[in-house]
Amino acid sequence: MKPLVSILIPAYNAQEWIADTIQSALGQTWARREIIVVDDGSRDRTAAIARRFASRKVEVLTQDNQGPAAARNTALTVAQGDYIQWLDADDLLAADKVEMQMEVAERLQDPRILYSGAWGYFFYRTSRAEFTPTALWCDLSPVEWLTRKLAQNLHMQTDSWLVSRELTEAAGPWDTRLARDNDGEYFCRVILASKGVRFIPGARSYYRRSGAGSVAHIGRSNTKRESLFLSMQLHMDYLRSLEDSPETREACVRYMQTWLPWFYGQRVDIERQLEQLAAELGGRLERPRFPWKYAWIERVLGWRIARETKLLMPQLRENAGRLWDRMWFQLRERRAAG
Image 1 (tube, rainbow, N blue to C red):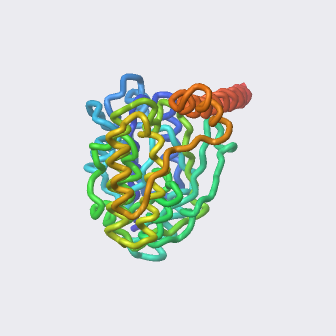
Image 2 (image 1 turned 90 degrees about the vertical axis):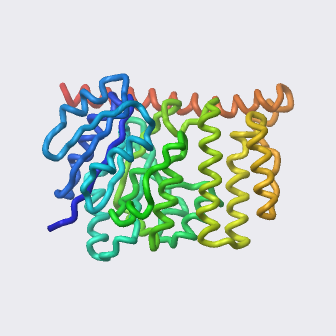
């Protein structure tokens, strides 16, 4: 009998997207699968929409709001699959995503190998998704994967992975302390338990740009800053547990330098801790510098205004792109309906 794949969908206030996401899971060409949706105390119609799909293949659970990590842990407690496919409530999977990864898994017959795939950003139209390869889009050992992630500030989106039951149990539960970057920390532990990552380029997933409503968005949240700092410490500990070398130490320092602007001038206590950690690793953190197009604002109006402007401008561009894509998406839907 073919292995069972559990597609696990944590959901919170996702009424606009949840139907398409569940349809994406139901449309998988890998026949032997179960779909588990955990509504994490949504205040909108997410749970009601999800229940429309309840069937032998789709189970819908509800709980009080506890955060995405807790919702994922709830899904894991009832999942029966030999493999786990995570799927965020606003994202989509290509129809053959799971099948392409499972074909390789069945050929290799090694539950300690972790499978990843290509992923692309999109707003509404998957046909316009941007797939941008990085240094993680290849087969890598655990230490090389983590070194590249930290040194180059890279990541693989949650939906891109396919994880065996054995690796899932070895990694342990999701860390409910983390309000931000809980997925990055979790998959570090999965990678630690693995023999390595096998990249399947044709196994595609689609990561929706949801702007300020995204869990990944930090904004002015101190809770998310503290969560990010904890996740960063865990990331560096995981890498150095595999290999404590000049290369991995340098990767950790570069990692801290990349994320320093999120604390600089806002959380001086964390800023000082990062500087101390860098010094212990033989490095030194530099004062964050602005690109030329924001540097003049710093000179005229000060660092804080320059930083706020730098945060605001990408959001404005993204919002404009989202509105444009939504207009074309709705136009296409009306034409199809007509």
